[in-house]
Image (cartoon, rainbow, N blue to C red; front, side, top):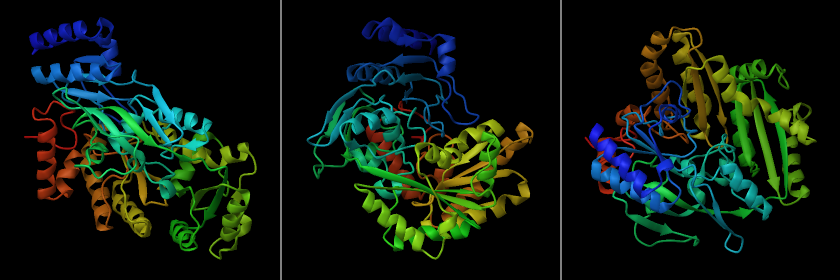
Length: 465
């Protein structure tokens, strides 16, 4: 293998550029991890692609040598999707970071995969347009990673997720073949929906090199508010009340008591309504103040809430204060316990309370701190179990049981194991357990069709053997 790897390195350096290929130990160390807690790989080479042709050359050569290729965007994933768990070549797309076009007439952005999501949002806004998907890491995550993971975000309750805004992809197969599917047109009933197949495929089927993103007119106004509740049940029940009254928030987030306490400790600042057992954070948007006021007045009239308790942001500073706890929760968790189990199950909205209380009760014997928050509007719940002071080996031994508890509760409640973070490496065994045998068999046949030699991101989602 050493001889083949050296031959591959020399060939790549000749085909691309010497600086595009490296086995420098310090650089390899940086690409050994993504943001997954407690997971590290062993990359053999790192290759920086600057064009679709570069990607094609790398894949064609690696396929010839049967060397694994791990596509990588910004490395912000949390399920090990960009970790080279079996070694191989990390193919970095971070230098393919150009917004190629903002087509205002067709309301389509054409982007390379390394474009940072927040960058596209800002550029679209300059044209009076909006790219709605908004992962929490939007200022650091890349569009290619968003597409590969099927990323979501707080605005999913009104606008949907990444999959709803991709009208086409250019991608490269494992043998180096370049395929263009879809484009600037919205409707497409031609052949199989290859774009849909690749969204959420996590780099296991092909490498995405160009993305066509649907844009929409940006709302002219937004309004943010916080509503406290005496129980999580009351908070989640209020979600249904809002929707039944035809109030459609752009964002509808919840934080339960333990998450609020941790966030307050992290930022050293008392939360609004610190006695509350749960908070709902709501953003309304629209094309006029009148439209937003109508929704706000509906909310104030609902008997389920005390109008005097609702905090409405009257300035950018007040808005920042309302959202500070929600935005810092991941950093607060990492600061309290660098090693933790992070899950993001998805259940029907009506079953959020049953799911969370079931998980809390099942975790009680383990005496571990659990933090729960997420997207009340679409049922995507983040559950983080912290190691804290527990000995490392003891915690690691418990992780399979903790996952089993959380995933089983999700399925009992009619849900699934992940809503937006993906399967990756750390949930592959759970997929085997909870997916049906015919479904798993189809996954393998799909993988074999796209990547016959199994070089693309091996040991993620599904294995060929």
